[in-house]
Amino acid sequence: MASIRQQRIAEQIHEEISALLMRGLKDPRIGFVTITGVKVTPDLSRAWVYFSTTGGEAVAEQSLEGLNSAASYVRKVLGKLLHLKHIPEFVFKYDTSLDRGDRIERILSDVREQEGWDDPARIRGSADEVAQALRKHQRFLVTGHLNPDGDAVASVLGLGRILESLDKEVVLYNPDPVPHNYAFLPGADQIKSTPGDEPFDATVVVDCSELSRTGPLPAEAMRGELIGIDHHLTTKPLGTVHYQNPGASSIGEMLYEIMGQLGLKMDFELAQCIYTSILSDTGSFRYSNTSPAAMRVAADALALGVSPWDVALEVYESQPLARVRLLAKVLPTLEVDASGRYGSILVTQEMFTETGATKDLIDGFINHPRGIQGVEVAIQFREENERLYKVSFRSRGRINVAQIADKFGGGGHANAAGCSVTGNLEEAKLQIFSAVEEALQA
Ligand SMILES: [Mn+2]
Image (cartoon, rainbow, N blue to C red; front, top):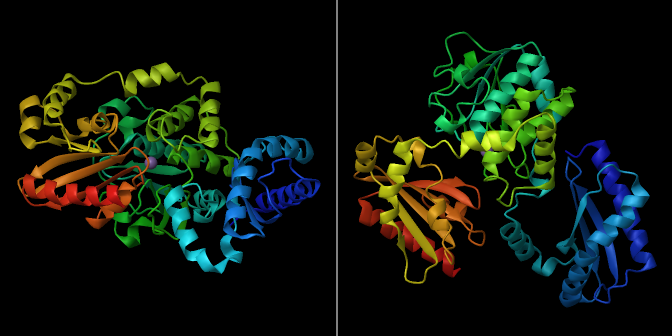
């Protein structure tokens, strides 16, 4: 649900852009355009401006180009008129609801094109609802997904600190250990491997697209109200309170928004957690989820004294020797298909035994095949046993690998997804490679 402030700003933008168009924008590509609606993201960083036009598809396409190239000019003019601290980025969209003929196709191609991640229509619940639920209860269990990544560790710790500052009782829980490179985070040694037997008033699950991704939770009677905070695309509501924002870079960014609703400010420790959560999920501010909003939250963390180099030293520059030895065994397994468009690596149980490395140490290996010029999809096979392989996918951007993983019962993001396949290595490769080839041809 859009807040009143969001709606009011959307209305103002609607009015002002309409007025601007009446006066005329100079671009000859812009036809007779009517603004049909405006949607603004909750952090006001972006606004979608829907328009219709007379003259059919070709005119609409041309107008769209003209409008989008005028977007920064429009932003400047509106900046002066609207008296806002941050003027949203404008993205113009052809409103096909007036054009029934190709409406469905349009919607589908829009979803494909944008991955849907930054569409405000995909936001469920709100930071405010979570804030109210956090205020209401006293004793909390906080958990993220198994095999926790930087976001899952840092956001569980961050939420723990937020709750403690509200004088709540908190148990942080994950049966899997904290990866070595996130052990520096404040409170990392306080994450318990079991939830204990005392009942909770509420259980908060972060960064999980499904409840099955967490470790075993207390029985329903013991866990209290279930609260979900997630930023995946494929999430089904998993609690009575469920805030899902696929436009958020990370749970850390969502916690920052929730803190705003609670009237709390970050301290240094919390800033460390939130910065690390964003750093980790944006691949060090490289992936397409590195939004203006993510950067603003990170900037706030720096202002509180977080040192990007100190964090990078811990997260990226403190590799155990076993990890580098394992990588030395994995890289010779690199295969790239004849067309050069997909590549794979293999990690076997034997390699773990030989190097003494643990499975959490392979995080990031798959970026080696993805980093090859021309490769669009990178694949990593990790042997669980002789008949079971865990498969990870990374896309350079054009191919939606969540759709490939979905065919095998897995899921994830458009650019990073995973699944399992049964069969020996040859059979596993055959199945996965043919699905990838199919996706590349589509
Ligand atoms: Mn995440």
